[in-house]
Length: 350
Image (cartoon, rainbow, N blue to C red; front, side):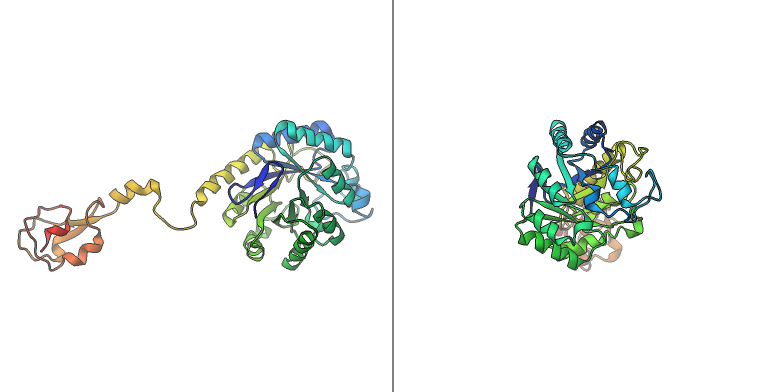
C-alpha cells in the first residue's frame, strides 16, 4: 500500500501536503520560483504544476466550467484561458525540476497528453497526478500505467464504477502504486458539496489503496477535517498572490500564510487521532488515581458495627477501594473502630 514519489513517502503515518500550483506561474519563471520557494516555506511536501498545450486539450469553443474571476475575458472559452498559460516547454520544466531540487521540495506535474507525460518522465519526474477529467480517458490511462510509476488519481464528477475501471486500466498496464483522491469538481466547492463521507466509501471499495483529498473549497477547514476520515495526502490549490490576473485559480487558492495554517492544523490533527482503541492514556495516570472516588466512612464507626448505607459514601481520591465494592460492605461487621472520612480497606470487615 505504501509508496514513494521521489523522496516523499505516501503512507498512513504522515499526511503528505501537495501544493497545487497548476499554471499560477503565468508563464513566468520568477513567479514559478516564488511558488516553489514559498510552498516549501509553508511546509508543503510536493509542489505540483500542470503540463498541457491548449490545442491538444480542448476545441476552440468549449465553454468554461469555472468561475471566470481573474480571467482576461469573462466570455472566453476554455481554449482562450488555456492558450495564454501553456507557454512552458521542456526547457522550462527542466528549470522547474531543478528549482524544486534546490529548495528541497518534490516536483510533480499533471500531464494532459501522452507527449507531456513522456517529457515529464524524461526530466526525472517520479510519479503522476491524473486529473479528474481524464478518469475515463482509457488510452491515456494505458499510457500512464506503462511507466510503472506511482499515480495519484483524482475522482471529481465520477462514480465508483468509473474509478474502479480507471484503477484496473492503470494496474493492467503495469502501475502498482495508486492513490485515489476524493474530489468535487466545482470551482470553488461549497462546503455542502465537499462530501467528505465519500472518502470512507472510496476506502471501503479500494482497501489496498491509499486515499487522499483533492480539495477545491475555500479556506483550510475542510481539507484539515479530512484527516479525521483517514486521508493520507491532501492537495490544495496554491498561489503566492491571490490578486494576480489571468489564471482563475489565484483567487480560490491558498496563499503562503493559509498553507502554513493548513499544515499546522493537519499536524495537530494527526497527533489528536491517537490509537484505534479506547484506553487509559499515560497523561491520565494522576487523574485516574486522584480524581476517581473510593469507598469512605461517612461517620465514626465502632468495632462490631453492621454496616448500612448510612455509614458509607464515595469520595476522592481513588487510591482506596473503588465504589464497585460498595455492595460488598453493606451488612458486613467491622473488625475495629473506623474514624469518619477514612478510606476503607477490605480488611476493615469480617
